[in-house]
Length: 92
View 1: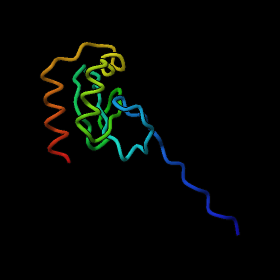
View 2: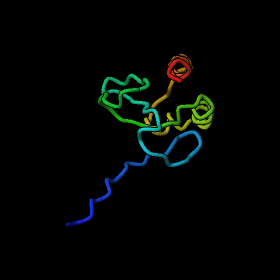
View 3: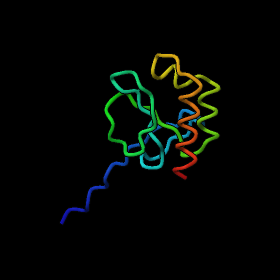
View 4: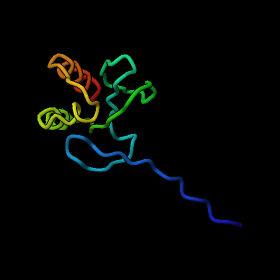
């Protein structure tokens, strides 16, 4: 009998703190094909994704270093950040 193969756990890097964690522990931020940027709490939305910890401080670090702008190659307004911050706080 063969030993069971260990299932590979997908790792993603947080844009805020830079720590690699399992995908399930992070929140996906997605840029839709229409150009809308939002939190993807289900992980099923279509579009380009970037990941952050479920922590507002990581969102603020990524915002300060303009890491989302770099990842999505576009400017992101302050109101989008405030909506993402509210969603993160309500999701905790």
